[in-house]
Length: 87
Image 1: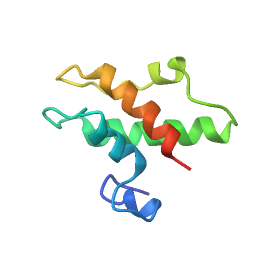
Image 2 (image 1 turned 135 degrees about the vertical axis):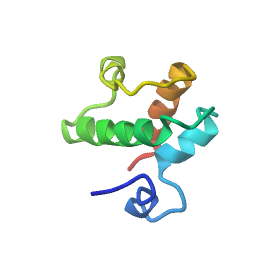
Image 3 (image 1 turned 30 degrees about the vertical axis):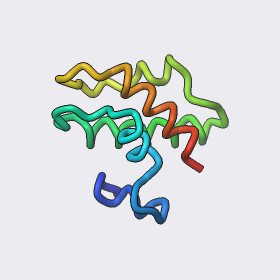
C-alpha cells in the first residue's frame, strides 16, 4: 500500500508527477484535502491507463473528495497535468 509520503518512491523521484502538478497549479490553500485528492487522482489515472484510454471530464467527476477551499478548477487542471506527466 502506498501512502502520500511514499508516492515519490513509486517513481524514483523527489516528487511524484501528480504532486508536482499540485505545486505547479498552486492548488493547495489550507491543505486539508490535498493528500486524499492526490491519492485519488493517481488511482484514477492508473485505472484509466489500465483500460487503455485517457482521462476524461466524466472520470474527473468521479472524484468525490471535498475541498473546503473550493479549488476544484485547479484540482482538475492539476490532475490533467499530472496524468500527462505520469509514465
